[in-house]
Amino acid sequence: MTRLQANLVLLLAAAIWGGGFVAQATAMDKIGPFWFVGLRFAIAAVAVLPFALMEARRSSAPAGSRGWLSFALVGLALFGGAITQQIGLLTTTVTNSSFLTGLYVVFVPVISVFALRRYPHWIVWPAAAMSLTGIFLLSGGQLANLTPGDILSIVCAFFWGVQIILAGLFVTSSGRPLALSLTQFSVCALVCLLIAPFVETFSMEAVISAGREILYVGVVSSGLAFVLQVIGQRYTTAPQAAIFLSSEALFGGLLGALLLGETLPPLGYLGCAVIFSAMLIVEMVPELTRKTPPQAAT
Image (cartoon, rainbow, N blue to C red; front, top):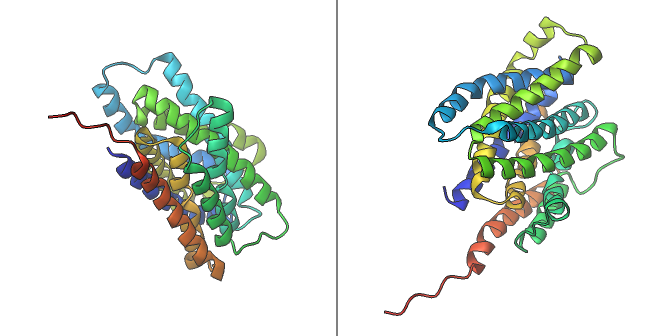
């Protein structure tokens, strides 16, 4: 897979996640966040399981205990991001949540530099700033007084940044994207379902009522999109992946306007253009500035 193909895969994952924001928001009228996230990722794990088993049969070497522990660590980061985002949607809008979640486009390169001493291509920094600016414009150029949901969405962005970095590291070293996906889904589901009975009441009626949302985010937004993420990240860098994945804010804002009646401000259209420009820049500049090896004399 080429880097362009990988980034397009990540863009598709972002589009699916944008639709997931709408399903996540409407589900909060029917079911608590811990039960919702737990059931969501339990379904995702079941959906990915047969493909992970096929991958294991084709693999030349087992993942090993160290590999499984690494995958579980990604699952803990996934839990942190998923649950803070879901609780945040109780007290913020889809547009605000998608904007603030998009802050991981800034967190990823910063964490990469300070934690891993990995310095990305220089174009990532202005592209990240452009993406953040575009997401901000998408919100209308202003955020009113921050709600608890807004603050949780910022915390969520940090966890997503960690998850993107860890997923990129471990899928590259293991070459087992489906095993990683299965493990992170299972860990996230298990932690949520262990906590849920202590903080929320369980109602089968509520689960059935939110069934469409749970199935969509479980099978499509989680099972499919997160697999696309880890596959795409095998062939691109974490900072570039973060920029393409941040376009979920664009899709979330647009779908929130179309399906939930949330108003997309005039500045939002400018924000869409800025985000799209950032993606083109981060894709094209490294290729245009790459040094080509000198041709051998004939």
